[in-house]
Length: 176
Image (cartoon, rainbow, N blue to C red; front, side, top):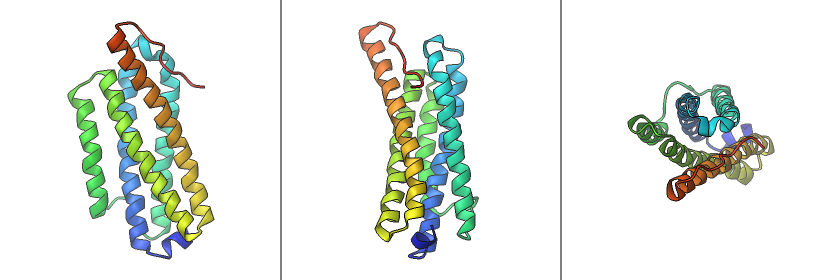
């Protein structure tokens, strides 16, 4: 991370804070959706995988806080950019709060996971650009986890859509 931060430490801290804001929101989204899932038998086979994804989001949050502190930043004072990201994530949270239906929850989670993937991909690309192999490896690890989240949530959204269109119960995704 030192090589990447050596280019512009304050901007790197800002980018990490942006990711952190989204990871924090992601943990909340997963918590809300998991609570709803526990009372819906249609999705019981998905619960364990969703718990794992939630724990990975929490690990991402904690790792980012650690990286921000290591660079001399404050993980609890949002930058101007991370405030924008917080507003975006609050929009997604609002959808889930306003309309408590699992198909809608998963659609909102899909949007969050797409943004998450894009954010981690940007960090991978930047680390690669400056030749920071260690940072790239760490970012790529988390990007890979986010890609798995995205595929799982996308499959769930597809199954919910089929259920709505066909009027027949669908087999929801489960842990591989």
